[in-house]
Amino acid sequence: MAKYDNSFTDELRQRLSLVDVISRRVPLVKKGQNYWGCCPFHNEKTPSFSVNEEKGFYHCFGCGEHGDIISFTMKSQNINFVDAIKELADMAGIKMPEYKQKSKEQIEAEENYIQITEKATQIYQDLLYQDSGKIALEYIKKRGFTDEMIKKYRIGYAPKNNIISARFNNIKIDKLTSTGLVRIGDYGPYDFFRDKLMFPIYNAHNQIVAFSGRSLDGSEPKYINTTDTELFHKKQTIFGFNFARDAIHKNNRSIIVEGQIDAIQMQCHGFPETVAPLGTALTEDHIAILCKSNRNIIFCFDGDNAGQKAAIRACTLVLPFLRENSDVKFAFVTGGKDPDEILKNHGVAAMKKIIDNAVPLIDFLWESVNKNYLVNTPGGRTSAEKYLKDCVSKITDKIFQNEINEEYNSRKFNQWHKWKKQEYKPEVKLPDIDEMTVNVIKQIVQTYPEITEKYLDFLTSLNISFDDEVNKTDLSLENAEKFVISLKLQRYINKLEQERQELLKKSLDNGEKYNQEILEDINKKIEESNTKLELLLDMNDK
Image (cartoon, rainbow, N blue to C red):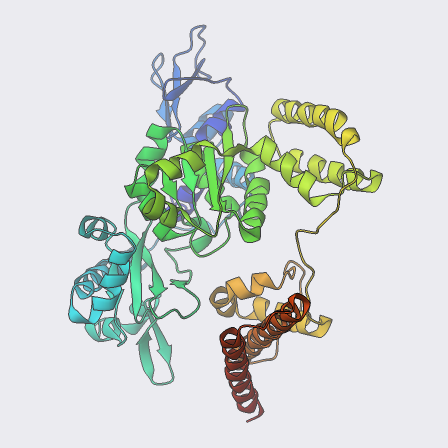
């Protein structure tokens, strides 16, 4: 009989909690590391049915029934394999693939893929300690990485030349391009990663399936990742999870930080349960994977506006996964620092204090609502109540949802009517670019995902909503990128002009002479940026 592709059944097991699926039919109580209940497959009064969430199987010590999430669905509902897969796919909210067996060619292609990424990792590792990797090695050691850490995480260096294309010239080009390591240009194949500090990315089976490369010359973006492939899907991959899995179970929680260097430093300095998303915003898939291991999560973000926005997004994503025994909190690193800097400059004790002082989700959501809505006015309170109601409705456990609603109702009654009128400062600025430019940017984002990834920080700073559907742009990839660069330059020039005006105004108001060196530096930057912009516009005209 034909079988579903293993990757699909693996995805079901990854996205769905065995405890959640079984508890729909069997009341379960956690005792120690496992959950226990009365077996649904034979009559008993004393619970002997054990569910191990981490390992993904159940076992009855009474009748001997044993299996995983798929076999439980089949046996408990007396349905066949295909129907069980369909039901679980509906629960997970994912589309059913075509019913087919993995071919010999597919299996061989996956094996070749892993062999190539493994060999590439070894090449990058060796180059880090050669003359060509001197700058990369100096950089990573300045960041506090020891030789042991470099070896453990298999960090390496991708040189400026096309070393992967050259070393693998005896392999068919389509096999190389399928890994994302090599692309085809006008003059033939070329390496995607060049002059980058390289971080291997592992899958759930501890195999290297992709890479994240960090720039060493200060160029943007700081990180580029392997684009999605058959074996790598960025939105479903958590950096460091392969190293953190056992610690998450042992420490009964996971910690999520923003970047891979932060994750590694945390793992090596007393917080082995730390992971990070990969160059993209946190996704529902990331939360689902972590909640399968443990529903206790601490989100650790920067304390700036971007960090606050990321925390609010994380809060809304995690709400459907909350249970009465979940412990979700939010910690913030303030002062323009990140966990890496805190550990390096202030030590483990300072980082532990930040983690220990994390705010529970229920309090974080309440504080966010009070900051972002005018709760001292009837209209503001109405909007705030609607937002809270929408958030709480995402909690799928109805009893727990009711408890949260009662808690917020009590807070609204005791606190909102006592609030005094206060000055309101909006947290989120509206876009300061014209509507035509906004539409062009939206079209570019939806047409060229590679541009989106490359200029993600800049594009998010525009405060544009990219959710609505727009037509694809007629601009070529090159011209679309020039448009984004020119807009970035124009905004940078405007910022410099504003700094110059503020400097002159401050000097005038205080009756003091302005700092000539600072003014000259600003003028120089404006002149250089205008020159770059003019050159870019000339290139567009040609």
